[in-house]
Length: 178
Image (cartoon, rainbow, N blue to C red):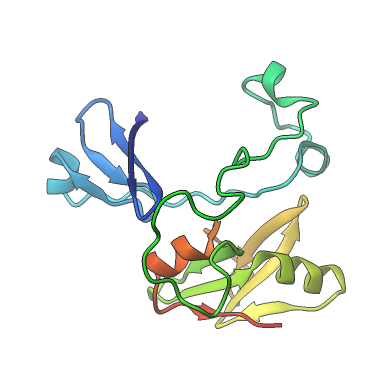
């Protein structure tokens, strides 16, 4: 079980494992300290689809909410207004191809190559019927959010982040442009 440390790496949350006290960089999933770091443990990436409850429930009617009283009927801003006027912590040198707070959907292919899609532009293109593809990674709309697929159609783990974070952790990112 992971819990928050209250610490950040490049403005991204650092977690710890309660059993071993190993500390994890949650952006890349690497154990940084402790017994799990000594074993070279890396957490598998889970895809998160950012959408609203109605569209998710329509696509996945079997879904249940763990804390229903806090989830239903709320207009939930997953950042809670954080960073509304710019990042609240220093972010270092950021790749100038996008604005620092542009939301991107990022994928790291099996060969290690990172690919990113500006979220707003990708959604607009897909809504108009265009194909959104870069270097063998294709985005599709799923339940009001995104899923990434490889050339064979298999699902790929994807990560939604601010550009300042994605570009710092993946400086060699290939960027999709409409």
